[in-house]
Image (cartoon, rainbow, N blue to C red; front, side, top):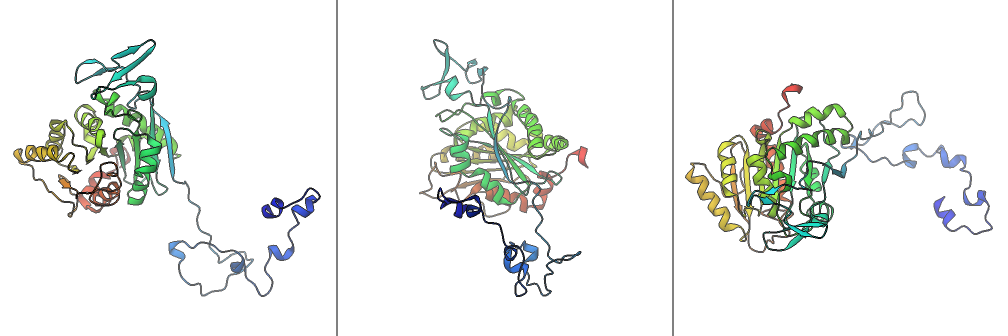
Length: 371
């Protein structure tokens, strides 16, 4: 009909444009079957050759239609008060106000590199990228992945479209959802904003529970999300909010894994302390030559504490696993979220986590309220 209408002329009548369907268009002839006219995509359980005939009309039809998914995959942006920005507190490095530059009515921040970024352009986006795979089931043990992006990034252009973080979550097959807060917008600045504050990470996770419950269509599931284990992934400049969330965030008991992607630029004491005090979780840091020196320094700190360190990703992830893996020359920092020691490393770590029976029980344990 659409094709006919597209080629219609001014003199065509309504009947010319939209002809009435004939009986033969609706029902098969004696030499045809309904299956010849309608091609249904088989589900995995239906990929067998049917031996019995298909009845066209019957009180008990033998043709089983694929069950419709109750919920489609969801990737959206949600504004959250507890996200990193806006932030009007102090910089813990100097105890000075974070917004330390004024020009007329505008306030800004002079970054570590000396460049001034304005609050209304760079530190005013409270949105969080939320991704819920189609297969996610809140009634089953699950995990929340929190992704802290690097410098010069936006959620849509970089985290979603270039680094494919939501896709990696879905492709892993793990029962997981994604939260990725916007940090400094498209700026060479690693500031953590509200994640600098004591309890800031916990407030963020508490607020996210109600949003996730609403987005998955079950308001009663907020309690399940509020107790769900967490895996933090920090890329590049995302090391700063990761470190402070582990140190003062207030939700350390829920964090079951930390994964750093070329991100050990500092705060080594915070990472070493979390690893030493949380032996039921895992820690993975993969790195290029840009962060090699700091990663090697952190390795020595951990070995001095008597903590076993593995320097490859060949084995499974277990409770207490501490893994450092240097990637080969030619791997670029910019593409590291999609190409590290393997393609799509976020997916790979989640798959390895889920493959370990011990970690699966730890990272997927239902909350006490749901037992």
